Image (cartoon, rainbow, N blue to C red; front, side, top):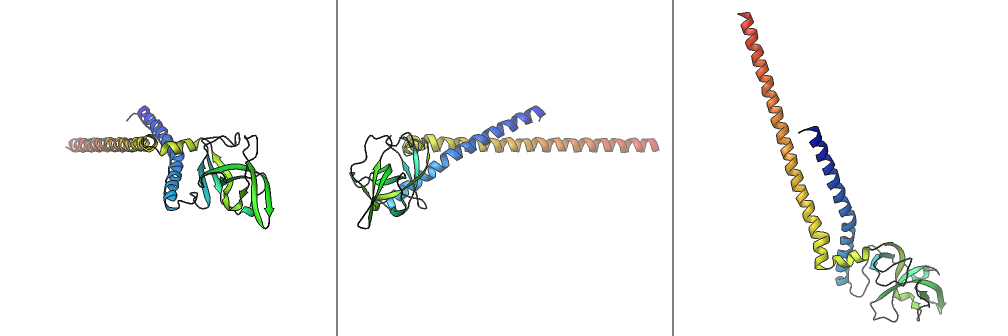
Amino acid sequence: MTEGKKKSSSVAHRCWTVVGIILCVILVPVLVINIALIVRSFTNKDDVPQIGGYCPMIVLTGSMEPKISSGDLIICKQIDGKDVKKGDIIAFFDPDGNGTSVLTHRVTEVIKEDGKISFRTKGDANPVEDQKPVAAEKLVGIYRTKISGAGNVAMFMQTTTGLIVCVGIPLIILIGYDLVRRKAYEKRNQQDTEALLAELNELKAEKAQKLDEDETSDD
């Protein structure tokens, strides 16, 4: 194999490796979170799915823009209601909802009455506060971080088309690349082996010729 071909093969290998790493970094965490959410939703139907005390949730509205946008994937940590402070962003079961819908708004006031804690909340993009205070028992967790746009990806991956596009096709590409890489590697090894055998045969021929010449000169 020429030096140019070796360099070209090395560059292609690095490019495909980078592509594979990017796909893994982007898709694997979202896929793992998706699977965990689905499993948890079936095993704990009355609770928000969580992983090690952290709740990944998909934002469906723009009530917290510009801090949090619709389509973001947010991570909230489960904490005790007494640790919540004014200004914190919390996720909670909507007091006006159906019992399962969750909102993520900012705390404008912590209310302590008769030994009980509740919170007044407001979406940053909303003109007024939420109508009803949120009881500490309705608290899901406190906002920690977000992955912009990952919620849209997570929802798309829950569809058949999304699984095919985000999991099936990349997996096929990676498997196909690995097969091509292995075949190319075996071919290079075969070529190197043939080159070594040819060199050994050439050395043997030179040695045999030298022996013949030595015997002729002795005669």
